[in-house]
Length: 175
Image (cartoon, rainbow, N blue to C red):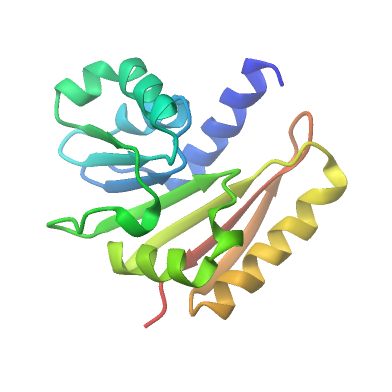
């Protein structure tokens, strides 16, 4: 996939998440840190914690975003969601892009995530599958999974892009 398409989907994601300068944000599955850099660039008094199970990817993301790490606006951890340290202040927003962590042992991962978010926090689950015909079924499966784990799904959005449409399921942790 061309880099331009990757940046386009992340810019759309940033618009939807409406990152504010003081937000505390958790990225699940940061990969090489492209989205992390865009998010951290919007923060002033807030912070980003970006996690990935792959230590080499976390190293790449940290190196790519060294200035944000040194400024104290970003931290990168090679941990699964269940091992994220409890923050002093819960997260305002969490997001994942093309992350399959919700499919393996979703109840444990989603319970851990709910505990990290503020009660009125937002979870954004983005997907861009390789083919257009999979976008809506993946979004619907994500919605059902979140609801089954007690999340309140607020909406699902779709954005036409290349090579395939991108979806975002927006939810809040259950009460």
